[in-house]
Image 1 (cartoon, one colour):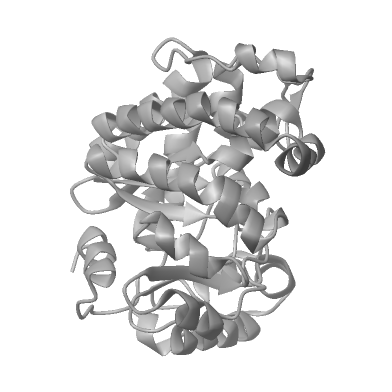
Image 2 (image 1 turned 90 degrees about the vertical axis):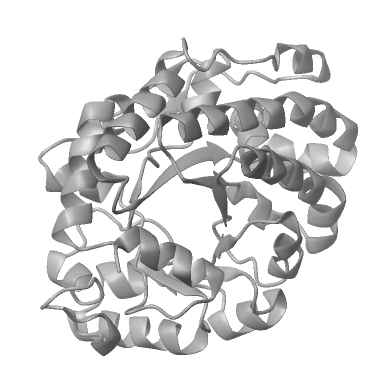
Length: 339
């Protein structure tokens, strides 16, 4: 099977020759090819170079244009300082009061530097490997993007005290995200990741009342454009994941603190789960043997429709031998994945 065939056979619940493996590489990939993380997220050529290198050298099944949370935020007009390592730091929030909701306007995807750079990155990846590999584009979810524009603490307070303000902004945020996803699909992405990390900070009831509908609208828009969707909400979503299953996303990422068997019981057998051993305590700090043990446990508990990866991004400084312990190939210590 090709890596792309393996991904989509898994999603369809068909038999595969081995489990699909899709670790999230960002800063680690940049360092692997001799660049800073800033180089990676500001220059599509560096991103493509890094992603192609780790995809080929570690035999993974999906190549990704994921880079940082602030592509869309920059397109709204927020200015950033960009450190060599670590994500950008906004100089000022876009939304400081209810009156500022009018500043949340349609973004110019093709002519805003950072959204255009994402499209160029997707094109580069697709031109190289789209025939054999799934190409993952990325957009921010409604809570994440509102949080980038408003601040996370303010966002959590708004969901309690001013949910109408959040909803008014989301009407534009979600439409912009759909359009950004469509542009990435046109550039060659077959799957779009929706990153809504801040949604893990709210209660299940609040998620259902204020967020679920917006995520579903976004995911429906991506489906209408012809792509598959994976929903990525970092953190402990154990009590919320049953509701995430109602968004329509074919794939749901689970972070390391979510037991895979409980997640499977919550979402049923139709959704593909993706995860989920601890990227810090196991992958970064562990040994090849402990990584392999954690990977085997995930595969045993995740069910048939399961894709293996750490719960979130591969941390900078992770020993390559720990990656090789669970990535397919001759040095893999997980029997189902050995080349």
